[in-house]
Image (cartoon, rainbow, N blue to C red):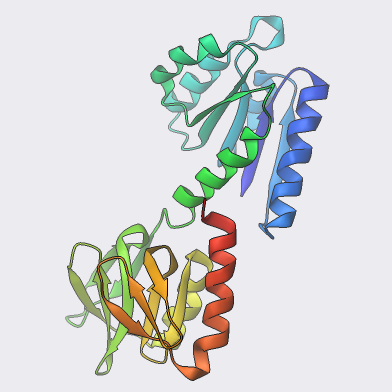
Length: 234
């Protein structure tokens, strides 16, 4: 996760960076932070997944104008505006602001990181080869589970659509693990965020579907599920 901070006052810049570093280390999240005291230097690089941007910078720089330029350039980073004047927040609709953070309440930095990770971790597509030799693109945010289906894999989506693709479930589990999926059984991989209940031998998904937990996968699955809940549940 690449994080940018644009804040002209060193005291606030350092406080925010320290909060982010502690958050990422506590949750074992790989991160890179680049801090800037002005928007000009940031825009020379402007490589960030999440940007903490002061609205009122020195030398007359305007945080909203910087965000507008990012949008114009096609940058995909989410912008969290920093301000001591919350009445300025109403102007943020122009740039689709992700969050407004009152500098007097920097605990909101952690809340913004929580929300960002929830939206980002599965914000990607994967490609699979279907049984006819074509290629299918699957949105991980909408993938409920993967299961073996004969010699194929069945990808079941939230809306009930299903895709049958080539592959081995062990390989699929390994590839999906970094994005919030865990293998519960030799035949099943589930999306952890769509689990409603966990029992000793099965999980219940958000659509009521029950999926077995195999003995060989039980300990690892429950550890991964616990880590997921610790990181992302409110």
